[in-house]
Length: 499
Image 1: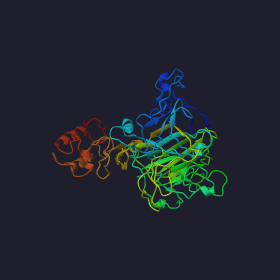
Image 2 (image 1 turned 135 degrees about the horizontal axis):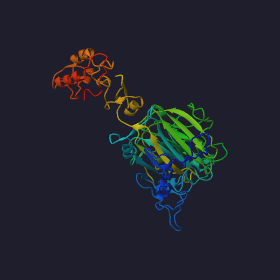
Image 3 (image 1 turned 45 degrees about the horizontal axis):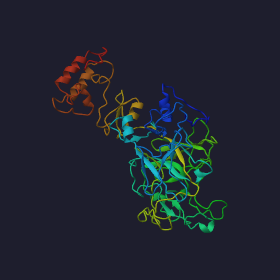
Image 4 (image 1 turned 45 degrees about the vertical axis):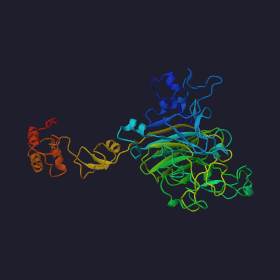
């Protein structure tokens, strides 16, 4: 079962198919909703002995669930808390993923997985990454739940689609979350047992104090969405009633260069099957938040729906990074503290003791973040990535396109990297050069201009079509095949005459 981005938020889809009870209990969400996905993990496979009832998979009394993520996930963090299996607040039961512990004093963790094997299984061994185009969009979707109270607004987690980021990422290098320290918040009312300083993520606009301009930041090969309290550039909230540490009330999106805290009207709504009046608001309490990113050649449509309100938010955002992609990350990558005014890390990471002013260390969560659940992480659509090449059409026209786009347009792709200048787009029957349905003296006149002799390449690219035996020259063997096709004007040619 699966909640959809439709006018009825409670709509449920069950795909037909002879699935056994055992299959339904293990990987039920992925198999039922996205059986042809490039990658899908509903985390339900951690129920190794499913009972007959597919909707629940409780362990026997006294037996704990498996808490460690299995491959393909590579679970990482220098400081402790990492993502693991969880059995509460899931979008599809029995299990989901808990993203470490987001609360104050606990270090934030993450997990990555490389998609190259999945992409090769989907598109073929020649493809190790996937690309989104306007004709073949690529979709990333997931659900996240902040559990009880308002933990989602104090959390720091995201799901990332990236390129070459499926292993142990070097701390601070290509991080989406490098930071500088805030002002001292205790005079403003911060009563936590931390030092009174809070991290502020630099990749945002307006540029926070002590951060370099985001316009000078290098493009990271990744896009992402999630809840990021550390985007709060005013964590002290002096003069305000309530908390005096970081929090966020809206979904965050990363375009490859910077984070945006999404609000209605910040980017245009591209429209869809239903109105999207929402303001990308994170809803407190035990609420599933559904996120879907549909990537095209130069932009992404972000759709967001909290399950409690059912109100859809939607916008189209230009991308700084447009692909290709071959990895997924969930959680909060280990960042570094930046030297003031630069994108350079300020010394080595030190995870002993609390974060303090001018001290680089692994980030600890914001108060109230708790354990946030993520479920049903999926990547689907797109096309296997290879360089674009010539795309030949039956009328001998040519354009340059990615292979899958070429086929969608009704053409036949040549090899990756070829161009229309070096590729011959031949008629369906190459001997019928003028494509009038017969092979006569007009076609023979063209054929004569292409004769090159045995072992010699034809004199022009279009003359490659005269090599009827496909041996890359035009000689007496090709002449014999041509004469076998030549029946005269207005006599329909045999399509197999050159075979």
